[in-house]
Length: 267
Image (cartoon, rainbow, N blue to C red; front, top):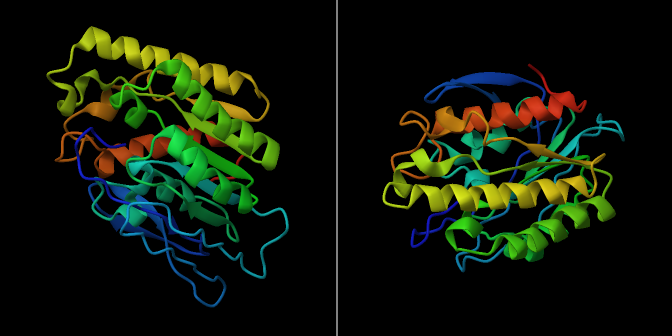
């Protein structure tokens, strides 16, 4: 996510999941994927200096991977990129989930900082469908909320992404809703009642989109019990984005929802 008026960082990273896992101490102990060049190929996309989406590169699964291996694609904005983490490529919440995927899986992060849902529909959805994913996560809301996009228009844009994934892939789709942002430092001067009303309207829109394809699309609840997500320990020094500790908590929420629907993630 990106606050209004803040510089944005374009991010798009493709990281295949490897056969071994190492422990790295950032602010918390995080499982991260190591690199095994003998069994996997890595494709990387260089961010575009213009702030627009770069061409999509395709991750190549290892030759030992089965046809039914997990292919995970993340759609989102700066929190999907990992802004606020010490090492965004490894510290973002999708990267932390990717580190839990089984051997032979593939992970593609299409997140673009500052993206609105309508922009993600144009810039990220086609690349996501092209990857033939089996699992997709979508977390796009706070930029739209900050930009005062009305809930109905936001629902239309998010719905176009989700419906496009349902129609164009066989993936299970996990959509994050909006945490209770009232405790986030950047919103200190914002009218809290108005902010909560906006969050509630957006979360209702997300629930309606998911309900259209209830057997394929699942809401990841980041609002309920979200005090830990917006504490001083889990918000980065910019007062807005998650810290490494915050990204771990977000990853835990998504991973729990994914495990509940049978996605094979390591504990």
